[in-house]
Image (cartoon, rainbow, N blue to C red; front, side, top):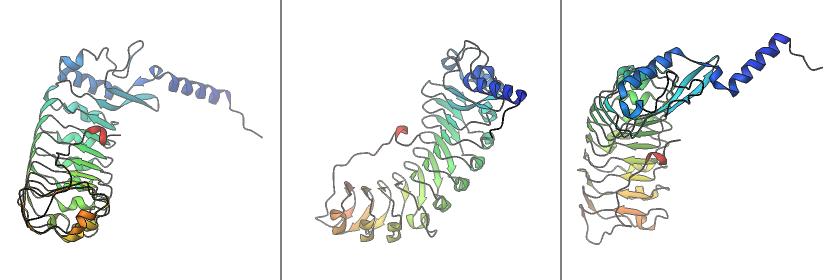
Amino acid sequence: MARRLSLPAFCAFIICFSMLNDPVLCKTLKRDVKALNEIKASLGWRVVYSWVGDDPCGDGDLPPWSGVTCSIQGDYRVVTKLEVYAVSIVGPFPTAVTNLLDLTRLDFHNNKLTGPIPPQIGRLKRLQILNLRWNKLQDVIPPEIGELKSLTHLYLSFNNFKGEIPRELASLPELRYLHLQENRFIGRIPPELGTLQHLRHLDVGKNHLVGTIRELIRIDGCFPSLRNLYLNDNYFTGGVPAQLANLTNLEILYLSHNKMSGIIPAELARIPRLTYLFLDYNQFSGRISDGFYKHPLLKEMFIEGNAFRQGVKPIGFHKVLEVSDADFLV
């Protein structure tokens, strides 16, 4: 026999159902209202003109603020996404953002933000996507970024970050995409990044990094999911170790414009998904194994600017591989 709801329980059900279908009946959490209004005061007119009213999640006839996404949690609305990009925001990274504790996505890319990422960024425990590319951010990456255990996408490229790549990034168990290209990083890539089981894309191109590939892949079973490895335009030395072929999911290997030397091991031609191989402008020598020319998926292999034996030929037509956010963001 089916159970019947008591009158109080039935009324509570109706109220909750109404709230879900009319979010305005829910109040926005005061913490989030205060944080967004502080951000509004700091970002400038380009954002402020479209942020009307006091409630970022909407109030009465007023819609939610542009770029702000809210969700219902319990009896309140909370801000879960903040996407304010390509509007020429000027000034320091707004620290009040770190009070939006329910954020899952923060996107400030293609603005003119300056200064450091505040260490309080570690408070955003639910953050999955952090996109700050194409700004003028500076200083070192705070180690607190390693506290973002839910992070899957990290875009810090095209800024002025300096110092070493923090080892704390290896503490992000869900990380899939790591973009650090075109900054001022120095030192070596932490080999601990190889322990990230889900990392698919690692781009550290156009920095001031040193070291060898052998150091990078020294941990057994490293980079099990890696598809794209961009090391171009740095100061890497040494050779290409045959053990690199253990990265069986590798599709793109971009080594252009370094100071690497030695021969290219034939084992690399056995990487089943290898599609793009960029070796140009290093100090490689010797011959190229016939296996590369017979590889069923290899579309491009570029060799110019080296000391290969006469007769060694490239594959495909040279082009710069650039990817957009749309290729990776979900």
